[in-house]
Image 1 (cartoon, rainbow, N blue to C red):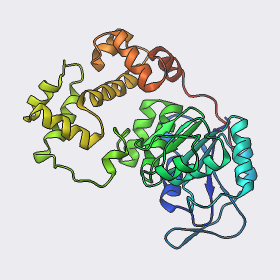
Image 2 (image 1 turned 90 degrees about the vertical axis):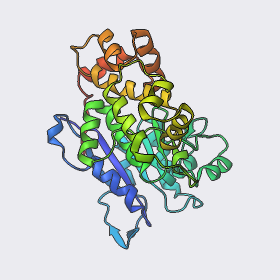
Image 3 (image 1 turned 90 degrees about the horizontal axis):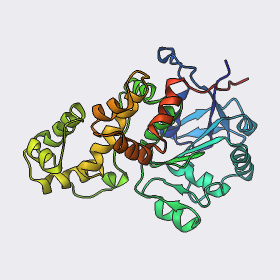
Length: 325
């Protein structure tokens, strides 16, 4: 069976962590998942030795021509946000975009996509330290400085380093559904999906979650999504005032408590929808939406598709994928 070909770009002064995240997600065999996992390869952006952060070297077996066959291209950072990438690389990115390949960047890798012109008129993100620079240099891009990652369909951009993991797990969820995405996250020992944006990581004074009350509340809400929660009832359960609850939720997750709860309910609905045996009305009830109409409205807003379309895709299995020859 042909497999979906993921190609990671290597370049001199490679960002080792971002590159390592890409290798960890796509290069390992995962037979326990029961799906045709990706094919993975690395191509060099330029001739000559490729040095990576930490004093190591990378030997890439392919050159830029491999991008002509890639289904997904990952740009794991870029060595200098102020350095224009090589013209040959930009040409390959444009060609890949024109033929419909999926383009993904981590952190400063967005500057490669921006220089190629494929982000003009689209939303994108990068590390909060680079966001203003990206917006000033490329005014045709709608920069979302607070997002952990931005998915506009064919192009997905992520914020700094670790947010690359969030974006890469999102790709797995897109391709194989929430169940497989959760299993991969468990193997990595990371959260399947982090809520909130980069604002929670920008250096600033933050109050402590005294006694772990907020963390305990979040765990309780995940276990009881169908209860009729309000800000007041959540605050009472956590033994804090509604104002304190609002502030601590915003600081911890970048979201208010109701917005956070809705996203958790959608995540539960996604897993339930991957079973063909749970009626939609029961999915809405178990996830805490109360009605199919409420489920459809929030699901479409956050997942950009309907519950029915999501179920049809992930109950019938992943799409046929292409393999490295």
